[in-house]
Length: 398
Image (cartoon, rainbow, N blue to C red; front, side):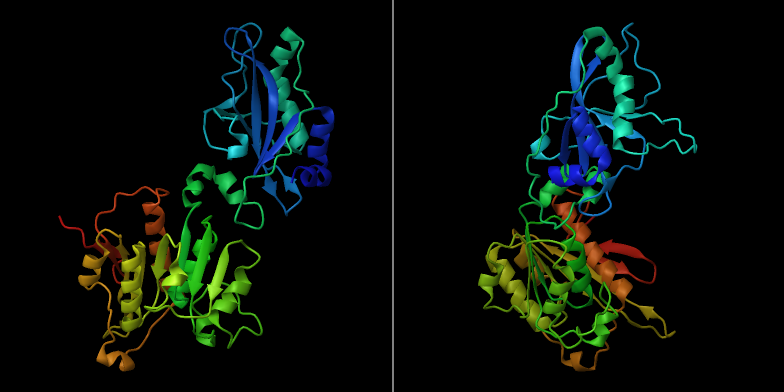
């Protein structure tokens, strides 16, 4: 990655050629060995960190005037703090390859530009400007400079994605995303809700995603699934269609044109969490039994929109979590059908994309709460969202 970025980006090449200690960490540029003075006038060294905005796999741009700093408050030679540095204490984690760089604060200093944009034209100008402000006093007092000519070409922390995950670095949630690093997720059923759930999980940095569905992809599926319809997809297995759609996005993705049942224990070997997205009671019952026996925590989703007397759509969306320690008891509570009702053949199956997507979103949010990604003050295991009043009710006991 180092050589590719330096060779394709003139401003980064100029930083290296001038002698700055340049390194790259995911979506960040790191420049180490920046000298500065502390409050006592003592020489210290720290690092600048700036966010990289990837145009493609090889080209980057910078889009703001902010920079991050791993040191303390920089001072002038007379002991006063360096002026014109807005910002303040700020922390976020870099990858394990850059554990020596601990961001402590952010700085904001807009350059004076002819066009009045207050934006640096490139990374070279940005680093040079902040060096003059922050390192200048130390360079004058101690006759030092930041040009150590050290470069760090260490491989990046392995990623499941096939391109730079700049969303994580821009949002400063690298440490939170590590919570998913060992997860192997099973998605059982790729209908309306299952297809949206797959879309969300594919973009989550879990170690592996396994999905199962035996059915073919028909026209109605295109109206309640993410993405566009491509020629040749109709009639193929859903698993094959979605495998093609997401193949260029991430590693660790395996989609199987089969439906799980009580004999499918080997398919769930190593799975750490499962999502059940099937609408047939008997199939759900077999899958529940298998997951309970294997001690796999899982979330089951369901939805029951129907036409009201007024001719409008009403109904509920359900999200139920089954923790291993009491999954059997929750199954017995009957939140989800585990047998086929006699009237199923006559039931209208209303599925609408936004309801499928919302049902999937509830399930993924709950999963991420359980992993410590989102704040979690949830009480109860089963939740119902009512379309009519947009309220959520749970089975929590007062």
